Length: 148
Length: 80
Image (cartoon, rainbow over all chains, first blue to last red; front, side):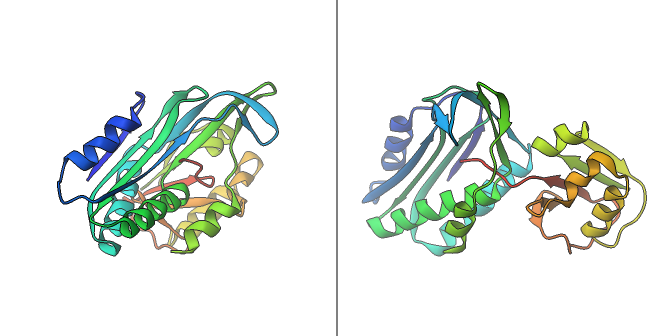
């Protein structure tokens, strides 16, 4: 398992291939990549700043990954989350999960993202034409996390 | 002594990223009530969707506190 919190961009393709190359018993890799959009909540977005809670962030992600490993027979998990200044089109988050068969990988990837969205201490501040604004939490994200 | 940290919008509204509080509190909510008692911008800690952590683990406001604990208050997280 690998967890990285970093300001540098990453290449999702490289991360995906690494999950497969690590173990020839891997029959399935499922991944999610989240990107910065240029539009949100009715406003154009010129970029954003991602704040986090150093120390707790890594612990929270570690705990989420551990829970996924306990619930599904996984062969590998990679989580990357960016921090700091981000431009539209840049990747923010990567979650990749490998397993022998697809269902565990699909479910675990979905679970990790739902938990990350509601339990990992990151906050987005968007730049809009009206100035910077903090992104508000969404009830739909809380609902998604409650499914598990 | 309790170390308290504030993040994101709360940090900006309070104009403070953290402080040491010397009184003793039975729970996180007791500490929060003490901070709310300062009035003015501190009202932000009354928000319904406030989140909190004790020693870098998410917890509820009912969480008991021990001297030396590290507490954090922050708005709903929005990563991913």
